[in-house]
Image 1 (cartoon, rainbow, N blue to C red):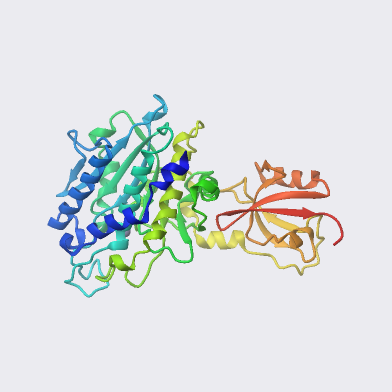
Image 2 (tube, helix red, strand yellow):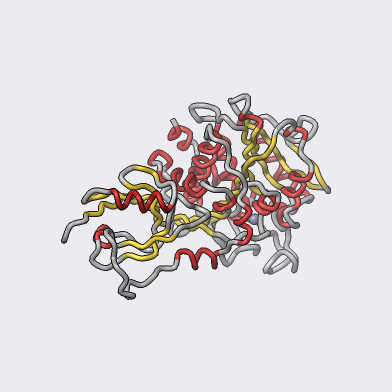
Length: 404
Ligand SMILES: [Zn+2]
């Protein structure tokens, strides 16, 4: 049962990992430093305890580069063919040490514990690894677990990995990556999801994972379209590999000595790790091939998104149409048109439909395109059941085409 695996993802375990990694004795885990090496030793101990085979160089967990080390482990896929395809799930474990004018908002010279950035992501990933071991069946595609070093020095670890394949990756290729960076400040249940438009269909897989009751995620998802070179998702996107990043948002303690464990929302790590696991498991087991990289994502931004999703006011006197909705096609998600207009006193309005909702299914049939949606709306009876997605939640609305 997926739920049995999810039950192994625990705030208390995550809290233990964050507590160790964000302790002053690790001196802020700067890449190449004594504290950084101590953090690596702790992570390798956890992987050894969990029994995940190493995938670094020379049969070890380590992929050394420039005095730093990525830590890599591989969960081999159960399907002989699909096992050649690798999903990389990563989190950087380094931070900025004592901080300086280049990497800290100050004060400098004090240990920057980086509890949220990114001990939280490391903890979430370790909890995911444990949970994968409790899945009813080993995933069909291979999953590479990566703890990146040198992220704070310019994404050095993830860039190195993409430039120089570790020996443990021989004969395999990366088809998708997932990045956990700063998942320790869940506020109001709101999770930022980056990169959903790097391949068609990723948003839907995330939404499905968020809505499966056994996943116990149920987060408010904020899909961010901006793509910046500010975490380990970027080198993958630059290498044209579909990539999704989960992030609970910035805060006043970001890159300051005060990013401490007592400010981390440990229970909040649970739903994020469960969502990430549900997403990874779904992709890893999907018999269909992983959709190709969508180059257009590089030129899209939140501005593009705001333009696409902008509501049209219900005042221009144009005819209402049967259900009272206006939609806009999204070339990035053609099977989830956006509602941009809901007429007053219309069936859609009475059912609670809102601009910004995305139509996913009509009368239990998945939408395949904007034209398909229009066809189905036309063909529907006097009542129709429409599944819409709103901020990552799927809501079922019943529209009735009769006078109120
Ligand atoms: Zn970070």
